[in-house]
Image (cartoon, rainbow, N blue to C red; front, side):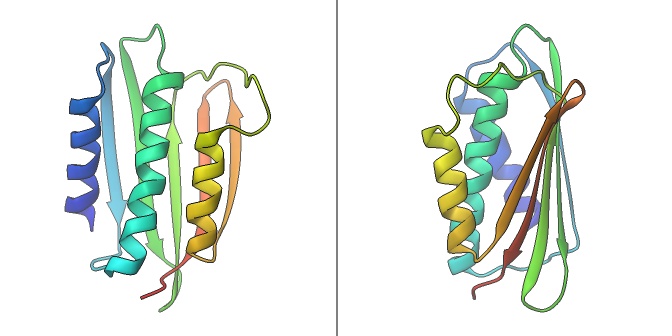
Length: 131
């Protein structure tokens, strides 16, 4: 799983043109994940990483993204996503991107919380392994 997530992030970094050098770190004790679970999880991460690159690192030469995935039990896992960027204030409460994150979270019978401050943005997910 760790290898796949690093590869996914590298593909997104290559396809998104930015002058910001981003340090990306993945930690996981989750070895293998099935197709029914990995698809919505990868789509969540695609949206999070893309949003960080678009909104969090404007005007910065360096950024940091950290991802932690931990097994809670046989059927559940947590996903913590953090970037150290300064997000622009939201123009509207819900955007297409946040709606996508919520939809894919619901597909994994999960919940998500978001906290944003001066030191960055943190998403915390509790998700169900649906395979």
